[in-house]
Amino acid sequence: MTTAHTPPPRQVPLGERLTFSAAASAAYLSISPTGFRRGVRAGTIPITGLRIGGRVVWRRADLDAWVAAGCPTASDGWPPDGADSAGRAAHETVAGGQGCQVVKERRG
Image (cartoon, rainbow, N blue to C red; front, side, top):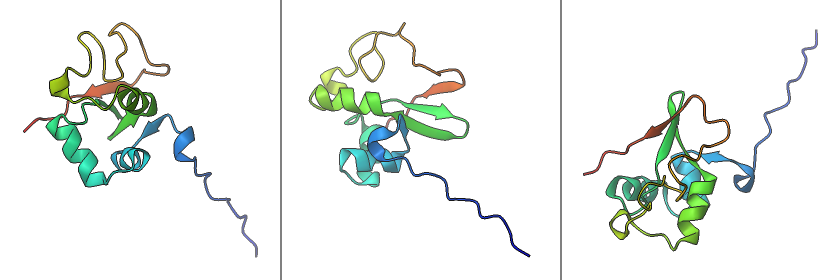
């Protein structure tokens, strides 16, 4: 008796993903996962995560915008007033954003 072989799921390269877990965000930024989590909590990486289902993920576009801005901290005023963590105006929406909830990281 033979069974059908199911191919493994395709692994999407980091550069092609739209969202990242904390560990993948850290890898994308070339820092440790612990350093990423600490930076998010402390505000030195002031990028807001999204809760999708039971997971918290970060948008690649937010990470790219933050790096392009010179990696400012929350005390440097990032994100700009009235903008989300990628510097987008609050009224701009993210494609496919239904079912996503912005996560406020606890400080301190």
